[in-house]
Amino acid sequence: MKNKVIVPFIVLMLSINYFFISCDKNTDCTANVKCVDASGAPVSNAAVQLYANVKTSNNQTVVADLKANGVSDGGGNVSFVFKLPAIYDIVATTTAVNTGTFGPATMTLVGNSIIKLEEGKSVDKTVTLK
Image 1 (cartoon, rainbow, N blue to C red):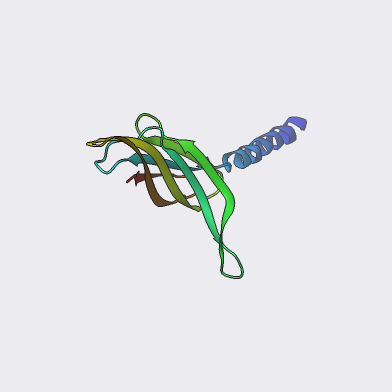
Image 2 (tube, rainbow, N blue to C red):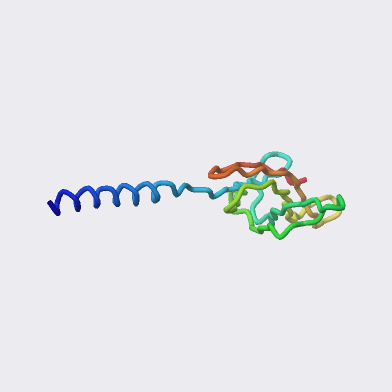
């Protein structure tokens, strides 16, 4: 008689445990940013910043604490992972040496964009630095 009670109880407990474990879904939001120049070539070593602008109750815009910084790799790529979805502004900057007729000159290239992250998804964005 004990086995008739214990076995269904164990099966029930294992089923409940499986149900709660399987409910854990991946909510990570991944932002993949590719930095390119005006000709479409990848830009390596670009400083990339993601930040969120938030409107206050008196209708002013402030930068929230939601920020991330990274540097693009040799293929111009950098990735960020966030726990919650959000809309981020992107700023990418790098310096380049222009060898013109008057000798080499250093110039700063900048690119701006916006990326909208969705729960559990990976979003790709290309930023052109000019």
